[in-house]
Image (cartoon, rainbow, N blue to C red):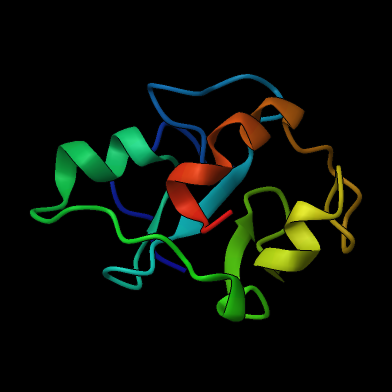
Length: 103
């Protein structure tokens, strides 16, 4: 799976978010490309961010950087770790849901 933007390691951490738990990449609805975060998208994509609509929350649009398992948006929003490898996700990412997802 190709991750776009300034990825710093093989677990999808970027220059903006790189704690131990910052291990997800998000597929953006506007371009169907995975980026580590909205800041990476803003810096590297040539278009505005389009949010995923609630009716699309069953789409696999979250990538666990640890095991490369794809999660649906709904599964991601309902869990604190990857259901495949149990790697913990950063709970503070929820502060940015409104950027990525229709709330």
